[in-house]
Length: 300
Figure 1 (cartoon, rainbow, N blue to C red):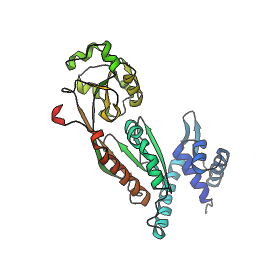
Figure 2: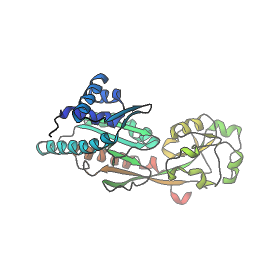
Figure 3: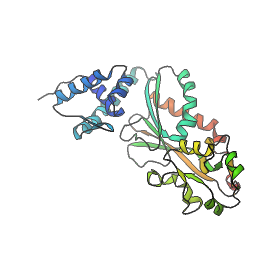
Figure 4: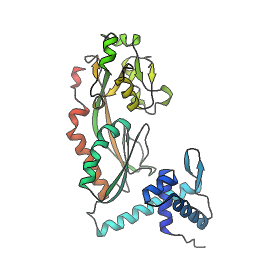
């Protein structure tokens, strides 16, 4: 038996599944939340399956919904590819980026207005938070991560190196002794991550500097850690590009190096809008190289 449904309902379902919220999907589509709910319900009726379940965390895909989403995303990619046949150079549509919180907030976000001015047909959604959304599951179009994802359907490339160091506020160092050795950190206030909320091994900075070093003040957010340090709460490891106004501590002994990676789903990697955003991100990293990695490694 052939099942008939409206393609527009499927697009609404994709938006609801991606955002996990009727309200967020409505904002993305330019309609009201009631319309999103109604269109999803109509699709569920046509398919005789529950696709999205409500939960305290938002909308959650059912098993049937997850199956449909995978098929719907392939269909969406095919429709976009068909449009590119007649308009191969048109840079328009939505690009959703998942980025490490610090990089997304300090590097990408301030530069987005310039991108928007240069590409008026482009809409960018930036998810800059602790943890990452996955292009492999089509939660986002591209991701900037702390390590290279190991997913077969992704095209992964190194983006840029960056450095981290120990920093403190001038006010903190005015009332506490400036440490002369790494071991002296044990007697001072240290700021860091909440241990059981660390989502990537690359974030275990304190153990790398001094095994067993425990923060007195901790947060799952690097942005919050930066504010704690800036407020005089202690000494913390921060990306150098987030350390403006702070004092580097133990500069001859502590310098950490990491790398950001850029990944996109193979099916959308070569679309005009993703090519344009990838080019913009790479140029942003190139022009900001001295901010991302300001110190020579052999000085650490």
